[in-house]
Amino acid sequence: MPIYAYKCDACGHAKDVLQKMSDDTLTDCPVCGAPKFNKQLTAPGFQLKGTGWYATDFKGGGAAAVPAAAGTAADAAATPSPAPSSDSPAPAATASAASCAASCACH
Image 1 (cartoon, rainbow, N blue to C red):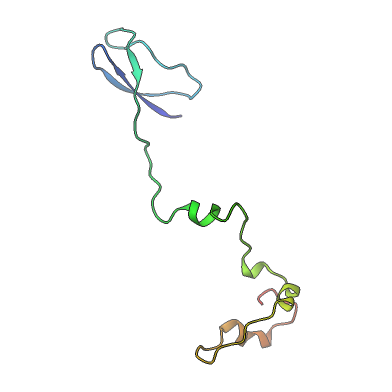
Image 2 (image 1 turned 60 degrees about the vertical axis):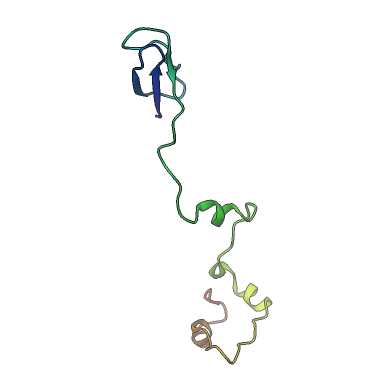
């Protein structure tokens, strides 16, 4: 349940009230009884920091990215692999591919 901040315009009494969203707003001040108890606009109690879930999860238009390990062996056979460059060493997956069967999910 959310916490709402109220303040009386007549006497200045301020109070935080735990209410359901479907509850009616309070109007009468519990201290002076005047019908000037108003809900205040307050800052939210949390902040989203860091790189953010929006940039990583939803920026691509809602299409979920498929991890590389989730592909099948038929997908791997249909896609030509790039030629290894002479400047960089061979990746570990290529070195261990000789010990795997053609239908394994690791490549």
